[in-house]
Amino acid sequence: MLEKTLVIFKPCTVQRAMIGEIFQRFERKGLRLAGMKMMWLTDEILSEHYAHLSTKPFFKRVKESMMMSPVVVCCFEGVDAIAVVRLLAGPTNGRSAAPGTIRGDYCLSYQDNIIHASDSPHSATIEVNRFFKPEEIFDYKQATFDYLYANDEF
Ligand code: ADP
Image (cartoon, rainbow, N blue to C red; front, side):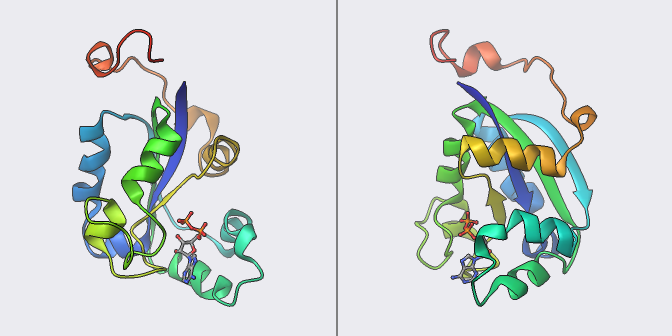
């Protein structure tokens, strides 16, 4: 099924000047860019976004790390895009993420792990709406679509 998912290029990626290199992986995969913008995150939006971590000792530190510089938020679309992007990202801890994954190839940290990626259809819907207004999400035909999928795959 065609799905939209949220990706955040974290401050570590902005500061290490690696947005282009990581972004290219999503483009090369064939995902359609549906939305993209740069923004400062606030404690308020992060408390909501990371609510599932609120009892963890590193909660405050993780939020602070996400406010160290602006971030770039993207919405990508594709068949099974949520699971596909999680696979490209790799597991949370960059030190144990496999080579070939984004986190495995580009970081050494549990916290500063390059990107956020929605982890389920439920959270993808909530997260795309949390970071984008409806008019910031663009529906347009992807010129390569017919060459990316067989016609029974979407
Ligand atoms: P993911 O980003 O892989 O979905 P979580 O939702 O569990 O992982 O955690 C959100 C973010 O919080 C992680 O991407 C990472 O930046 C940070 N984090 C999670 N667990 C830890 C940990 N044990 N130590 C440090 N940072 C963590």
